[in-house]
Image (cartoon, rainbow, N blue to C red):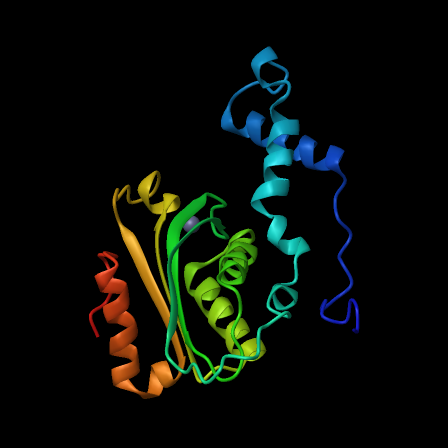
Length: 209
Ligand SMILES: [Zn+2]
């Protein structure tokens, strides 16, 4: 396999851990506190370690996750749906959490993947700085590109803490985004079937058509 060829550009010069911790001290000072205060001494180190977890998705190639597909589906040509895939992401405008659920459906054509792969695909894109619309499209487009199914549907519902804890302060506001590809876009009955499965599962805020 052509290792490394999937990566787009050479990695840009990454700041050192010490530089990252120093940046956190700067933000603590900007917030109005004293980064040298005892209770805050270990905070920069913890924040940087948390960032390693929050943004681990940059280290992973989503296409590699789907690379091992099971191709013998024995004529199975019904829709495959995995719903309620919980994720935590961070909005790229404010760097605060987006917490939500992804629902994925696809109509296989020879290839299927294990359901754990779908969850990992969501996680890889979630663990990056995101906008919900972009993440929805990335998941759908990657599935379409690698599995080449007859169609893909991705619906994401999420709450954005940049809307609930600052700015307009609207608690409980959820944003629903969707991306329909192939049969899910072109065939209303396929789309309806997918949305019906989601509604049956009790996901409440989904669009009806
Ligand atoms: Zn935001």
